[in-house]
Image 1 (cartoon, rainbow, N blue to C red):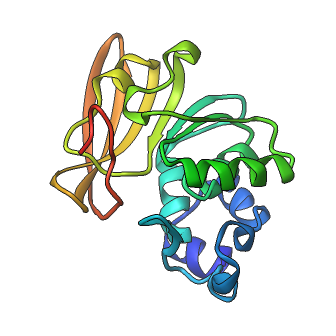
Image 2 (cartoon, one colour; image 1 turned 90 degrees about the horizontal axis):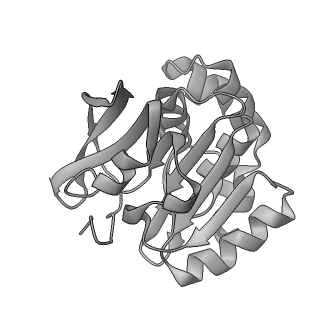
Length: 203
């Protein structure tokens, strides 16, 4: 998967490649779909949610420019795979899931894998985790109509926020925001399709 699907498509970050090669993706998909776990395709995880294709996980991890020791906020835990990749890169991950069923299935899996640098909560992700802010990096794995202001507020100086944004559900542009001297710049990284970001600042 790493060589054929990731390196061949331009993933060059050594930390990302190492993490993608070490995290057992088949444990994060439904048992009936495990034979497809390492194919470069998204897979359903129930409740209208998906686990992103490996390339997208690797690409977003690379675009995030995350480094060992950074505090990362993830909005939309889902299967827990993206959080596990970031934790394997040496990040301290605060991850938020709004769906009770996914929270109840994913939290035990992350504990079982011994990923102690992941702190998972169930709440409205569009409000962030203000009590743990600021964060060096914020990654949103669902698409909403706007960049939630609370997430911008919780981004530390020099931080990066990666989020899909679009005026219609499941039709977004991937934006990378950087905070420099209190000012926020935006970079459009192209079209993407993610599940809906639901909450006070989502759909």
